[in-house]
Length: 324
Length: 82
Image (cartoon, rainbow over all chains, first blue to last red; front, side):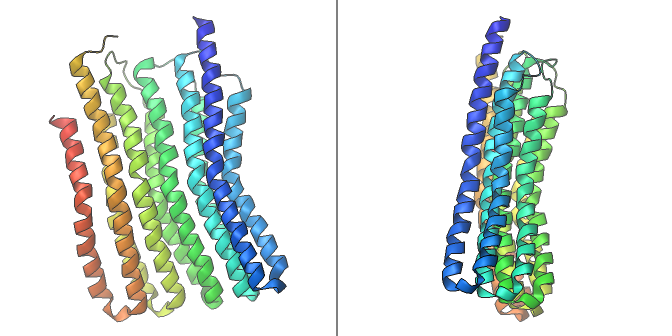
């Protein structure tokens, strides 16, 4: 029996590591490729700025890379660390940690790529603002990385907490639900925040005098875009740390798994939608500084409405956990 | 642990509710975001009409929201009625 569980643990750890690294590599690679393409374009346009474009490209790519480094860390932990206990809950946790980190690295990698690509294009256009552009890019892509960090935290909790003391049913479903909720909800917000950072770099290149205002508007827009990823993290933490009574039927487990799926998938649309809204608002704040107040108000109202479906998902997930 | 028919139906209802609300939230979220983006663009081009543009945006978003509300209603039906 024990030997059987250990075999399953090995299988789950290998599968989890493969999923984490395989899925986790996609976003960063796409983002870095996009950055390199735009950097080439920028150098062709303005060969004198080769040095600063080259530097910004490398710095931007290394930030986009961090999401897949998180995935590598989780994959290595899964491959080489000893499981916290021998039980089927640990088997589920290994698979769930892999899924969580694999999905969660996608949005951050792509988003950070948008930001650094726009910074390279901006330096070619406005070499004098290169310092300000690099700073803005660093702030913007650092915010993009937060969603990958949420996934890293959830994956680490899944790997390091001992779930064997809890009843296997419905804990297995809570474990999978937690991984899926954080992992999937990170995708939309990561990409949305990247879009906001992209246009703020573009805006600073067009109008370097308004750099301070543009960075502030970018941060405001990104903060609202982040909310749906935070809902996902919230649902994961509830699933991981609430104690559930043992279940003899399938329904309670299905409810917990469904809560994770609901919040994970439901966060995607609002995340990207709010990102697109903030992207356009920041673009026009850079072009028409006189309308800053009207634009900020319209952006926040529009984002609040786009948020509503994310809140519906949160409500359904909470009902699935606490009511039914 | 024996899985009985009625238990399976309840489990399917719960899973269905989660998937229904999750997938149903994608479209309205994206669509309302696009509507708000275009409204911001219009205000950037013509800030004097900000009030009119925001009002039109909200009406458009309210209509876009309807499918999200349908998903919410179906999810609640699956959870509490069916």
